[in-house]
Image (cartoon, rainbow, N blue to C red; front, side, top):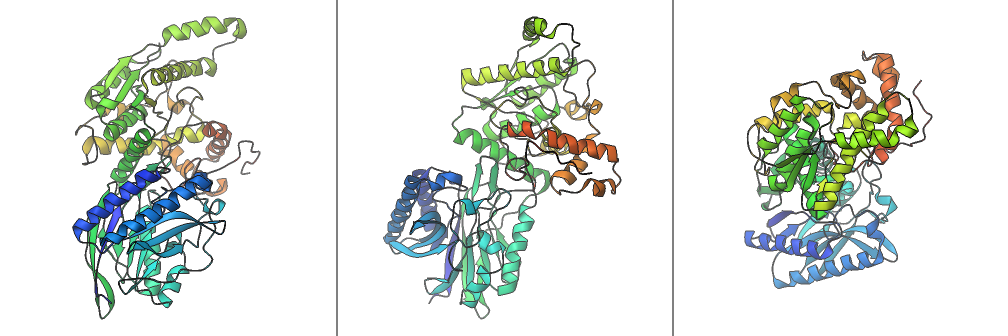
Length: 553
């Protein structure tokens, strides 16, 4: 039995479905761990298949490819280099498991199955996997009894306590833990619960990836047996980092490891969304993105995020002015594009508006103009952006924020057109805060220029869709500071109307916002995906019926 262990954390970015590519990523991580002198290298949950694989994992050919990959990786460990802990889907007796493997000495030395399958929020694993039949037993490596758990088994009592009672000496937990504003605190609390009840140290290994709406930011860590986070891997960056463990009279202690500072607040949210945009665009093999740059705050922030994700050469911005577009918007959009260094063009929509007026005149007759004509303008812009996307192979990024998506302040087939929406889970008040953060800050993983990239006037002027004369968002909506508070209580907290009113909000306003939230569900079902940021996002988390007669009375 050894009294020293060198364990590498491999925080890598697997791609769902790319089994061959993931095998190469794992091999590259193992080679780096070898150079660091590791005895063992630990990868994230379902690293072979990518996570979450959704219903793809039910395809028999995919299951076979994952099994063959695990067997090939096991053979790699016969070369005398580091052993590996990897995760993969695994079929046994017609049951499909979420499994983790110890690969050592050229073979699969141990297999453990995930017992607690999450079925909330972004997770619906019981739809696809069979729970492990029993809590896992300790896994022996170099004479040390490792407590291997998979993700959710750490979060709930049971598996950890069983492992400790069976003689486990330290916990290793491969994870696919998605990003949200509160993820760092929630992970620490769950890990501390297992550590406190067992007295064992814990290694938390998370993946790094933007996968459709879900973001995994890494932030792997080691927690001591006293419940303190000792060592941290970076957020939003691939890395292979070594931890050195020794055994003393009190048990196993992590004596050395990475010491990266974690960020929070606006920087954390901004970098998470930036990574989501980069991964979504590049993994889906688009050349770049095209954005309708209106001179407003949402499109300006979207353009900044896109440049920071992809580089200015891959971002193409288009101003599409109408008779209602102000000179300030024209100036602000051009100034923003110049500050970001993106390509920029103007395509006026007035010829199209005039053509539609003429086309629809026989049908509309003498009916007065209303939101129909406003929506035609928005939909013309959507047609222009999609035409540019089709012609040049760039994905359209939409620019609607969570406040607008909540109450339906958006036009189907117009400003909702596109492939991905970076701001879909970000309220309007947060949009302003992110703009101010980006103008004052930068980070090494951001590709855009330093300094002010969003002109101050864009942030301070009253928001407007500019689809009619003297239009302001405030004409139809309460101030965003009020609206966003009400929405957070309705969406994230599922609070009753009377409880929101009891906090001092106007009852008629709350009821109106609740009604708009419900009737806009049909729009959200047709909206492009966007990265999850809040505790509850639309689509993955909040799944309400479109036809819905309920109102909280």
